[in-house]
Length: 464
Image 1 (tube, helix red, strand yellow):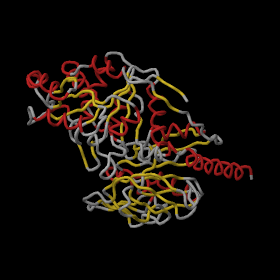
Image 2 (cartoon, rainbow, N blue to C red):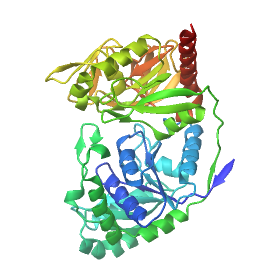
Image 3 (cartoon, rainbow, N blue to C red):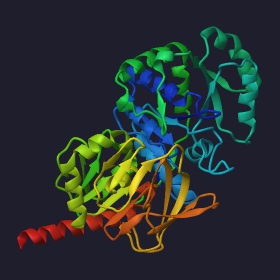
Image 4 (spheres, rainbow, N blue to C red):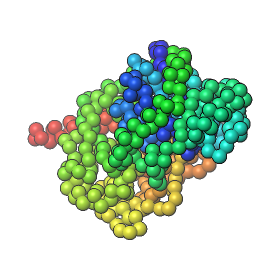
């Protein structure tokens, strides 16, 4: 058992759309400009908010998802390890919540920001949208404090309010709720982050992001009690955690698609692959002519639908991937990566030929097709495990495919329904579900063992 002192604070909100990411980025950029060393984490499975964290800090942000990281206590144990490792030797670790503070799986608080706070023993600050309310804000805050006996809430920040409004109501809000006021952020119409069908646009798509962060940092210095937040975070108790030993694999080269179209990865999972013995080789299906020299391929999710013409135009890359997979290159493909491996994609205005390594075609719809946490059970032997192996995963996509696969069965975490998914083989695991193997190193090791076997086969063929 390890014990690490980690100054940490979790920022939550009553609901999505309260401005958590904007306020968190403002605070982190202001503290960074003070010369402090920070780490960042995000509750839940979201890929986009961590990209904003990385744009501010220049280092990966860790996803803390108790469901994806493992069953029961295991997920909490892995979460504590990730935060202890990320927050060691930093001045503060900032943890951004997801959705509303108590919103979890189904009608429960399981896997909510509240549950993450409890697992990490972190003080929490509620970010409240102050538009169109006055004393009613006290009712909102008091309700969140008293909803559970140990809410963990220590303070609040008002978003979208004028300085005069904050000054006028601060004392009464503190008196009515017992929470400490940690400041406000005013309306900043030139600092909003645009959204699209999967949430915010990615940080890399905002041309003037650094200028926007500068304005947010200035507003945070003027309106938010940064010294008070640092003091609150420093009061968090030491984290107790265990460092689970990972199985060692033969050194292999793992090609990871990383560009405008494919950017949805969990930092801890990539770190796990490195610990297991993989060298991560980033490449671009849009800009590079062919796959790099590699022993396995990881095609993550992202926004391939926004770059369909460019992906189609790179015929040499499509041919390179198709040939490699036909040769037995082990491949893990999730959501957008799965779509790219199929024969074609259509968006209502045109059809685009893609890799063609897998049967089927995908198309964009006008609604979320399947979304939420799921448990995936292998019905046959796959790259990641034999028949009967279970994986925790999530789906969130507006597209669908004519061939989603039948190698596995997905079941909603709530148990309400199930459906077939995944095209798989001993060298393939491809489908809409997003995985996070961080809490399941044995399955990640199986992927890399297949990569080592492929490398040995290639070596033998070269010698002959």
